[in-house]
Amino acid sequence: MSSNLDRACARYAGSLVLGRNSLSAGLTVSQQTALYRAGLKLDRALLGMVKPVLVEVGLEQKLWKFYFTFARRLARICRKYGSRTQANEAQALRSVWLGHGLDPAILDRIMDVLALERPA
Image (tube, rainbow, N blue to C red; front, side):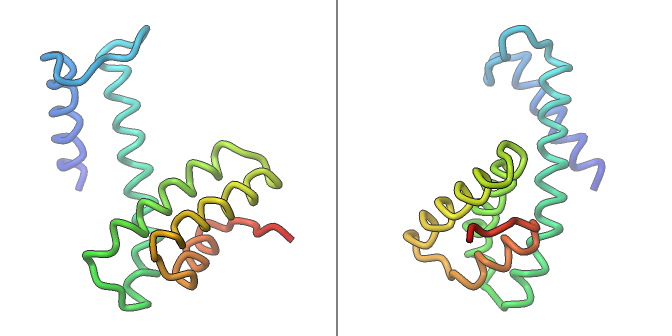
């Protein structure tokens, strides 16, 4: 798995050097590639937490990307906000994804896996 991560980071660094991706102001190619690597590691860890839920409920793999995107955005909220705001933002995000037709029971299970408080 590590080699896949290394290949993805090498491709990303190459695209920065060639100008296909823009380099953030004040960062070097190696610094931005390190941030990219950290993001990929976080995505892998998140997938490892969410995948068992999706397998357990028997969800078709073609729908996993929607639930994983929900989990990624939920994880961003968890890192960004404190408890009360976090719970409110998470409920707002849940409402958006319910509007897209996702199953509320699966969304709740993902929220439980990420140990997110629900507003009273």
